[in-house]
Length: 101
Image 1 (cartoon, rainbow, N blue to C red):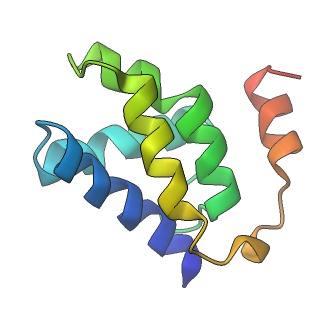
Image 2: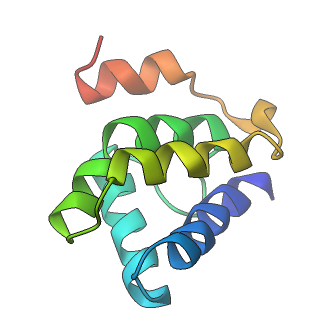
């Protein structure tokens, strides 16, 4: 359950903190997840943190969102309330898949 919550939380925060509407926020997050090889229904909070650091800022910037890095950093704080033990893949593995390590 926490997995779907990570996706929902990020989308809701994007709606609140940017000019993106619900459809645009959810679509943007889905695109970022796809680039990371993840899916909205199974992304865990720790996986979402990596996407927020590495992928989503670029997607937001391409959509005209100012301070995309700051927006993503602010959203990361909310993920700590979710269960971080639900992921089978470590953040290090995600970084390696994205080419960052």
